[in-house]
Image (cartoon, rainbow, N blue to C red):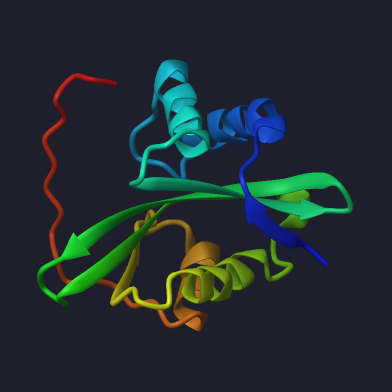
Length: 150
């Protein structure tokens, strides 16, 4: 049974290694520098109120991690939880960890009015999992502007 818990200082190095694998994979459109990934972890461990990190632990070993950011959605009038990262090591995939994460997050944020995530269209396995957990494709076209702070 995999335990989902908050990211702790002792997890930092291994989570950074998993993040590097994740951000260098085809599952992510835009890679991030090591400095950005380190800042992400530090913000999860620090007092940044907008981001939280979680790990999936199996018998004392890390099976993966997730990060979420928190915001407000005017469209739905309340808290929006953006699931930024979900990474599960290959040997732990297809064991229900992502589905368990969604249940965990819904329990952790009972006042949230929306949960969001991104997925590459080619990531069919992840899409199947998300659909089974009640997620649906959004009709919106996303636009971004990067400010060179990465």
